[in-house]
Amino acid sequence: MRKKKVIIIGAGPAGLTAGIELLRKSKDYKVVILEESNEIGGISKTINYKYNRMDIGGHRFFSKNSEVIKFWTDIMPIQGKPSYDDKKLKRQKNLSKDGPDPEVENRVMLVRNRVSRIYYLKKFFDYPITMKLKTIKNLGFKRTMVAGFSYLKSVVFKRKEDSLENFYINRFGKKLYNMFFEKYTEKLWGRHPKEISADWGSQRVKGLSISKVIKDMFKKLFHIKSKEVETSLIEEFMYPKFGPGQLWEAVAKEFEKLGGTILKNKKVVKINQKDNKIISVVAGNEEFKGDIFISSMPLKDLVGGMNDVEDDKLEIALGLPYRDFVTIGLLVNKLNLKNETNIKTLGNIVPDCWIYVQDADVKLGRIQIFNNWSPYMVKSPTTKIWLGLEYFCNEGDEFWNMSDRECIKFAINELIKMDIISDTAIIDAHVEKVKKAYPAYFDTYKDIDKLITYLNKFDNLYCVGRNGQHRYNNMDHSMVTSFETVNNILNNVKDKSNIWNVNTEKEYHEEK
Image (cartoon, rainbow, N blue to C red; front, side, top):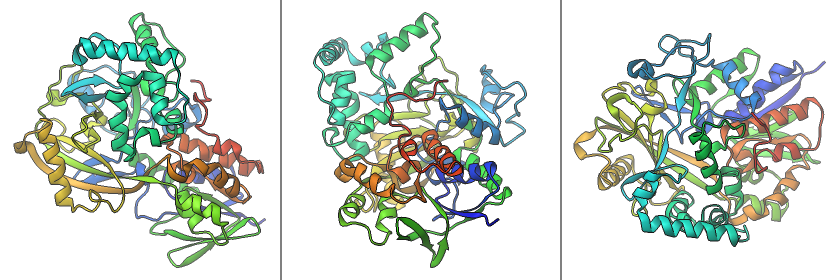
């Protein structure tokens, strides 16, 4: 019996998950993955610059989906012995009984503490905002009272959720929205929140609100355990020893062992369709015919590369907006930020994985401290600090077009301006640019349902992942779109609503 040929576009989390799951569950398929770059992992890749590793955008490995967790830990088991920093600092962690020792083994998931804070008014605030004494002290009594009454008003007078602005105000009140969401959202998207669909908030913030934050605070105060955990409130997560790219490179090797093929530097530029079927795709001047096609490439490029697309559908696809991303790795020997927490760290640096930069007078959006993601991400984690400075921009704009040298100088000047580093602290720097990092929720996005209906007419085409669905999914959701796709293929299910509906519910549909 002839094996059915499956062509997968993209070797990121969604594409690799679909490929390996198909080969694990059936011997009836020949699977080929076409990857436009020379690297594995998409935006979940890890950059190795002189043994200092960069995680593009930061990827916490956390999910309420047990299938996702099993997938991750089958590839990379959870640590059974303390990591370098935990051992040195005598920090206690919940470790796996028979798990590997990260000091000896490389293929290991670390258990890490989640610390992410907001930097505003040259002070640290919890992320998400918590109503505790330090927050009130940092804000000042007057700001706190105004924020409190503003929140109470939002509880009584609900706004119609026809924009991201109203979505946030309904959950946090106008004052906290103005302080902690409005300007940061503008940095991230380059648009005011009133121009952005509320869909973005419902997918990324889920049920989080001041009431959820207060409830979570009281549960911790009185040691009450909860079955439900908002994604933004988690305190612990898993992380591959050498960053997310390490896991996806391991998945790629397992996929190839099962008989799968990955072809790199094969950018798909043309998609041939006939009679509501995809016939073939063209990549690198080569045509690839197949029976089934799974696409994680941007919807804009997928539809833009098809023949005979209806004009209105093509217009929607070509108008879908994206936000591009520049991250600068900066190696320093000292931070001016003081660790005023009770969390021990190597070199007593601040314990944050991410610092959200709220100041409106700088372009910088977030700071990653790679030492805190994993000590193995940094060549000399006890004496050097490896930062990731994240900037959101549009491909071709002034910031994107800066040379690496100009980019580094710009970022350093902003850090000095905020008194985060001194100019004498800098050792080295590296720039990475990522196109189409964030699918955006404005412009023709309002008509995306028409585009989805059109694409669903192609029986043998499945759209998966963040860019494949033009949905700002977390990594676990991207993987679930592929789990659903593989199940549909194996069970000959034609309806694709289950694939498109991943991460559209208010809560995760999986309980853990």
